[in-house]
Length: 178
Image 1 (cartoon, one colour):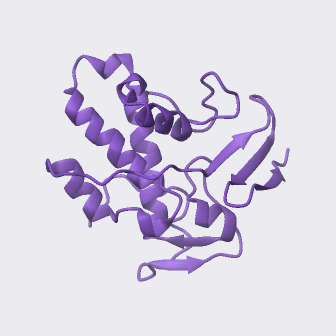
Image 2: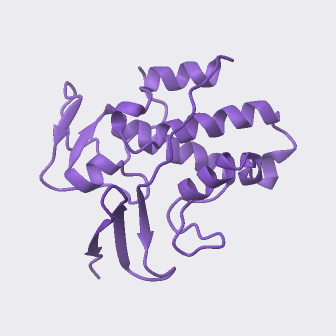
């Protein structure tokens, strides 16, 4: 477990031997935070898996998760990728710069792994060693569950961030400081 890409803003908070913690203050980059961390301050190794999944989808698409507005100013890259996956059109998300240079089956595997990493429930997400295995081997992958969690802006250029958890349709709005 030697990280090649790391530190989504969390490394300073935890000691080397901790694998899970409940924080008093939520810090990190919106759009990469796992639902359990953003909503409840619970951080674990599966929080990094969520962040990695977002980053994987960003690399494939060439777009950022936060501030991604396709046709709907309230959607994000995760939701849009899920909709394409559900409709068997996931390859439409691939950045045109890499579209011709990557085998479609490998890109589909990466998209599927990315969607497995961003599932709402941390228990449903693979651990990083499984992610590496899934990306490195041609095994049958489980179907990802829809991620209902997202960090959205109320307007494309607004400073209000709305976090929505669709379990009970409750929203929690926080205002970014100036």
